[in-house]
Length: 389
Image (cartoon, rainbow, N blue to C red; front, side):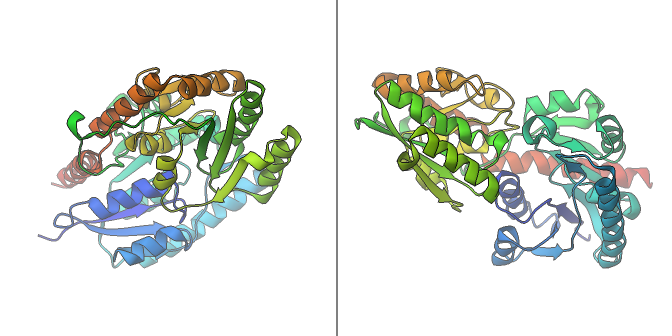
């Protein structure tokens, strides 16, 4: 029996959370059951890694159906680009016998369009809120877009209950399912977890990682350095990630105006941020509305306490006061309070560190993530095959 080929569709060739989760899935999926091809709009770090691991991929440009500034002409141009991309890809994919299309994001329509014309099942994996976290809107409005998503998907996978609750306003419940991202290898028991001692240095090392953009909250992390100084606590901030030069310039000006520029270390993009998380005292997740919280899980997996915002998917990962701390998004004074708690209470620090490791290894392993998605893929293919008999 011929193995079905799954076409995984990515919105970018970067290497941030969504792309990392896609790579984990592509590398971990059972190759005795499925062939794999990854579709990307351009070359980049993701294609380099796919090539390194011998995964087939196709590079063919297509574009998003969201924008921060909705201009009708731009929406029309995007539509034309995607129609041209659809025609081109249908020709390319003719010889590949694709059995299912799996779109790794809600910000692009090309995967659903391909599945429609190829007459094969489509799975949508939603990893973002769009408006709440990106301050963006769909070209054709939320209601019309969600109708399209509901119609052209066998299943809509959400990476948190927060995402599922939002999608549930538009998508039938039977099409929705929650699958938490899998980041960690194996499992750990309480006896295997080393006790991480609270740092004794008077200067705390804070870290924030992710795309450098307003919705990720780097400005709050910079502001809190000034507030900590007023409270007699010295700290330095490691900022990991890349962003537009204009926004980086704004952040650097903010640090300079607050007199903390010497305490901010810009580290750019690092392929393995976990090593930095391990060396930091506290990791901050200051996103206005985090869909999941990959950075939080990665930091917690090495026992570094996380302080995150109390919204979106983070409240499903962090149990406030037990395996991490939460604060209201945008409230820098509350963030400073939580940093002071961890910096001055060694017992709390050590309890949170230990509980953090235990909790994420119980819920966010790659094996569990891949198994759950393989079951969804198998059910979608089986259902579609049944419709033809």
